[in-house]
Length: 152
Image 1: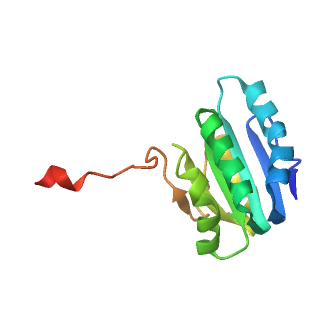
Image 2: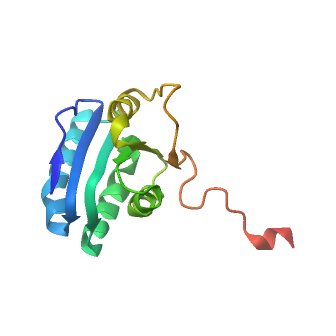
Image 3: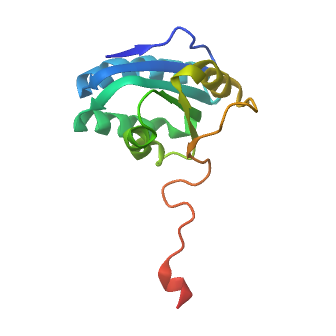
């Protein structure tokens, strides 16, 4: 199940994912996010994804997510991922989609949810909360890559 979080506002859109996500759930939910992006016009939005109750997603759901991110990448400013599971599992869950974006993506633990909201909405991060970058801004899919043949 995917649901919009009540803390969402004009600057940031939050969603909570529970259980195993299907493509049908993604298809039903995405129009809500598309509507908010449309309302913002050229102003970018932050996205907070609470994955603390997520058990995974089927391949078709992943495909729908990738198609959405490809279509709306220029409208997204930053992504905060909140999760209660192992760091490695969360990175695996979301890196496939966010690596295609030129957007900074950070991970927050469940107890840091208020800080995740603040960063998502304002781009500010308190000193006492560790910064866990999943994907740094401006690296894109091939960021930092230099072909081997250039050294020949």
